[in-house]
Length: 93
Image (cartoon, rainbow, N blue to C red; front, side, top):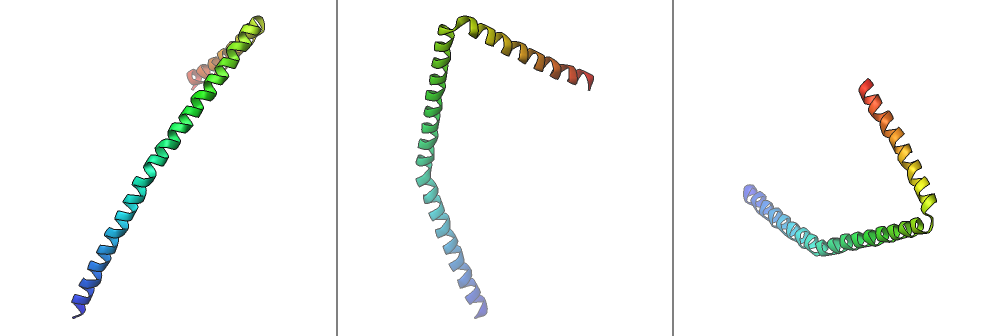
């Protein structure tokens, strides 16, 4: 008698587990399109912002060629010094 009761409860728990799993699967599948859409929108926004920044940089360079060249030279020298110090440290280690 006791074993049949335990077996019945076990089957009931198994059925509940399957129902919960099915609901979780349905919820997941409902959310996938929303997530995909959000990722696409974020990607499109990032592309638009990047294009906007690049257009502004190009406009600035066109309007201020000498100043832009000096800024580029300074950035290049700074990066060169920084990367050079990194490689020297690695050689010393």
